[in-house]
Image 1: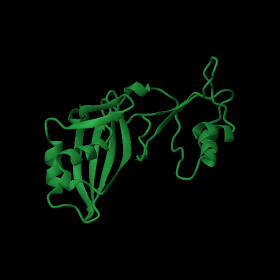
Image 2: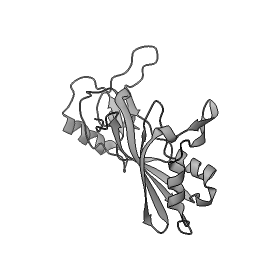
Image 3: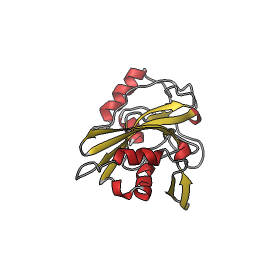
Image 4: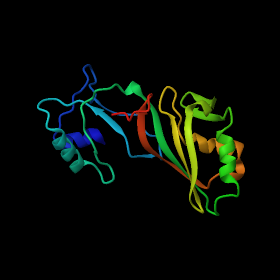
Length: 197
């Protein structure tokens, strides 16, 4: 999508060298299917005369689909490997209302010394302990049908997909399994807790 947006905007993206050149455009920490985000980082390099940052943003936003827009542009000063932590909101929705004591049960679950879940990957299924990857959390009610867990988790090497917490609820507390859940990424940080830009 972004490669096409650059072409439509008349911005020439650099390509790698070799037999099959590829555009130098990548998204740091690509989202899992079904996740939304307010803070995606797109890394790219342009060729030729480079317009001002305001012009790049304007041209891209004119060509991007509805719901996706460039919010900020800046020169790269840091490496993606320095990105370490992310904040996310995990929304748990209950058709018949939040079960009694759901918050207490979730708190007890997330305070355990170990939270083992099955992680699915292309290499197969493996059991993994997600507790060390969970830095901070708070649980609150949005209304009678929705709980939200505000999370601070490891972003990479290894990373915690917040949806794995739903898998932990299903495994350890099936009686409070939500009817629907979704995640929104809120912000990303380096390992000292400074916003990554």
